[in-house]
Image (cartoon, rainbow, N blue to C red):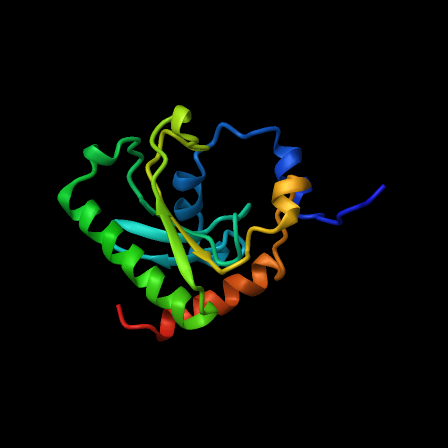
Length: 164
């Protein structure tokens, strides 16, 4: 029998699936908690946060502060900032991690795979040739080669050095 050590998963398993909206709770917390919450950037209407359970290293999410579940209900200002922050996320990830591609996406509703369907958010997922290997295909396991807090620090440093 093979074993995969992933102690960070216990925090997720232990919550039992919280009903609290992470996209409301994370930016509402003190800025002193940004590192613990993996929050990369606070904008005027939207923010950028790392996915705590990423598809790939560097998986970011961009969300409005306002709790809104539909993309077509975003204000023009929210929509503009969400897209500007998505664009900046691409530049920062490209400069720091040198991905060969990206997946961008918004899952609207449970039927579309939204884990938090009440709060719209954009996924920014860096991709590399061959990043989908036998582990997710045969073992239903994703391998993230760097600790989330280390990736968060590197992304935060790169973000602060990038042009807004």
